[in-house]
Image (cartoon, rainbow, N blue to C red; front, side, top):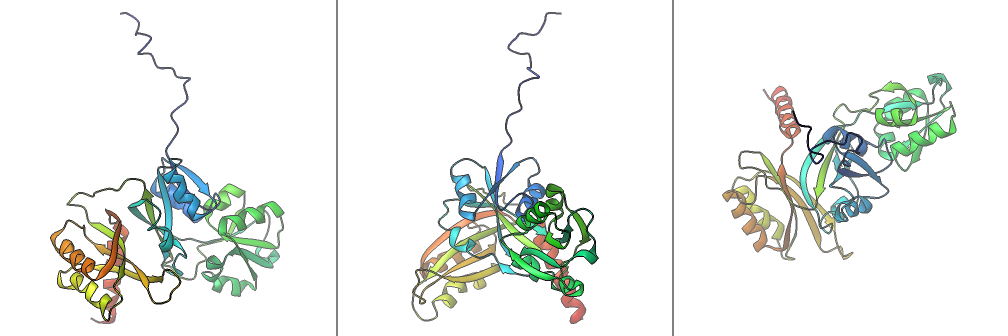
Length: 308
């Protein structure tokens, strides 16, 4: 049997092609990092200092996707994100929900009795008030959870703990004294995934449309602009306002609805919205994550128990 042509032989020593990157804000071990690993385990996480840098990494081709936290079930919406998305030049192509499990992290050998202070991001500290109070610890606010874990590990002080993820404990060589220390069991952060090109989910896939709009400055403009969603049976799951231009007289709205713009009911609703708005900009049409429907089912079950 003839030997394979040299052109067909595989060079086993050749390096594998680089994995596509997904950018996130924060240090390695941040919850955004954990979300990248959970949602896209085959991609290379790319840490960035600021949200603007995360979006720029995708625009500049350094990363395929950007993982952006948009709101948390306890802390509410993430500051500044709604201002950044419309002008990013990117599109929302997916969403992901990450259950936030906080850990009390210490240097190896430290005990609960040694602890005097605990460091973390302000939201992480506020989400673990019960444990902090029970242990009599003094909370110290830091820029982020992963940074707190890194600094505690670097100092080696057995009297200081950090609140952070299991991933940050693994990366920085810390031990978890207590797991799942958050006050609320439903503590979940929702992330959106941004890309340079939009996606178009199949017609048989439950989808979400995210958009921003500014209504005309006339009485009842918002009421009239949103009326089309009600009359056409389109379910709006999010509506938030924020100031633009520093005038305090005009607001931009961020909204999410279930469905696609080319669905007939949605098309009618958007036509009515545009009639009463200065501008409407669709940020993305993407598949709905299964968590949405699981959370809705649990909420309905809870209502049924209250109102049989």
